[in-house]
Length: 451
Image (cartoon, rainbow, N blue to C red; front, side, top):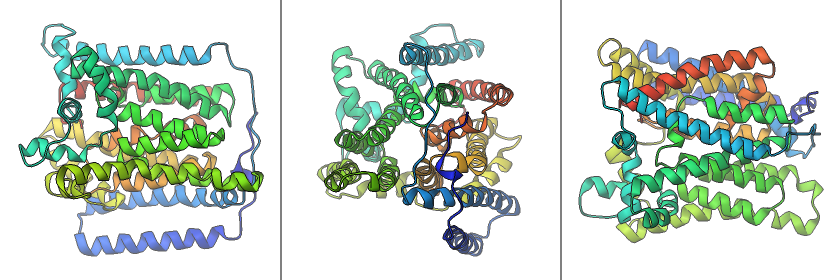
């Protein structure tokens, strides 16, 4: 039995004007980009495809979103679940981590390196891992070595979590991987519990299993912030929905202290607040807004660190622009320039082609296709979160880490769980995702420009 969702209600009269207004805004932005950047023909085709999928997903999302504002409720179908389910999920998540770890070792061995667990640990210091580990050991520096100075762009939530383990183990790499490998099973357990608020056991477990299968799972093992960030985001939303407002705010604030995208948690938290507004007593309405107000505090603390270290609270923006070429842009422009770079590297540089640009575009169009097909079945607060997250994370002017950013967005696994509600759909999707995950893992192990 499929639970009734908010999207099952009739289409509000305001839906059409809202959709048309949004389309006109995006069409204006697209036209301005065409005139300003003068992209290539392949780039224009990629941008049009990206924009069309985004608009389709938003168009189908708007009616449920408007009903959500009205506070129209939904009924969840509750079914029994196997005993010790969280323990099973945690152990299965650890098994996935072990498969990833030994998969990297196997890829290195096949490539000619002698098999050695400790000898292959150097791989995990690549990506942005070394930056996080440097901050864990030595905190931020300013005015010294340029490579260390620009590390101010990496938020301190993850290094501060790793630091106690570093002091105990006296090894920054082991400490970082331990934190990541503990946070990931915990995140999967919270993910299951969050899905169980609306759906039965099978749907919830299906969502978690897709989180295991998505290409790039090695990012959750690496000493970087993905596992911790995913855990914090899921905890914040789960606590909000369980009316544990202070905890929701604290988890959300630490998410914003861990990654700048954590600020976007105010969107689902605020929508959940609005949705339940009518059902709360007058005194509880103000108190339940607490998480929305607390989340930005985490990022403000990061700005204070910027000021303390460099004398400029927004210094990280300067480093993002000057060192990484990062500015806010349009997600469809990202599709365009990455398509151009994919074509340029075809048959010339397989490390850039297979390790960087192809995975970025697969994740870009894959997640947008899922959203276009399934946005109507996604809880509106989660869908709104995905829209903002995708637009900002993917809309940077020099994006290298698109798969890593989208992997930490649980809405992608949720969409797969909703769309693959038949056994044949699930196994077909799994048959596609597993080879992609293996190939991406090999590219990471061989250091093919995977970021």
